[in-house]
Amino acid sequence: MSDTSNKANEPWFRHLWVWLVMIPPASAVVAGFATAWLAGGPPALVVDDYGEIAMATQQRQYRDQSARQLGLRAQIDFGPPGQAFASVAVTSSDRSYVVPTQLQLQLIHPTHEERDQLVILERLDGLYVAEIRLPDSRVYVQLEDLDGEWRLVGELPDSATALELVAPDPS
Image (cartoon, rainbow, N blue to C red):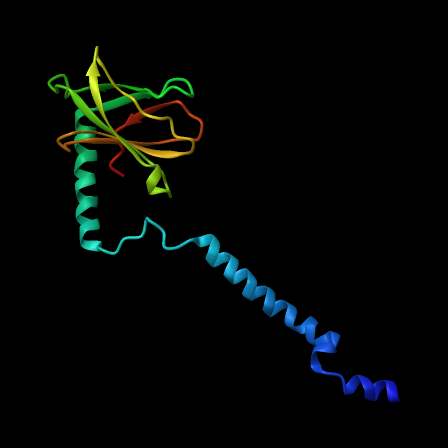
């Protein structure tokens, strides 16, 4: 009986059950701090000016529709890995359309804004060419004229070196 009374007189931190009950809440606190540390801050893709977003969406739809009406297609080739070069062939089903001397090519990383690339392509012997580094992951591709009249968009999968862009359907 003295064994039981001795255990009852021990301080709280010497009882096994106290520690077993505290393990789940303590691990939740540690996991919460780990999650906050891994998150690293607010995402770069969040914006709060919805009026500008609506206007930009309308402008994009106009440019997509313009590319569709011109029947534009583009074939982008980044060459072999390690080569910092891109060539783009643009065709139009509209015979009266004169392709510009320069185009703008954007490679947009889905989550890391610092990995985005923007280059001006110069026309050379029927192809548009520029020096550009091949992305090391999946990126969104946007090809457009410098006047902002049309655009072609697509997605370049991880480790791909070529992509065909076609004007999107109106759906």
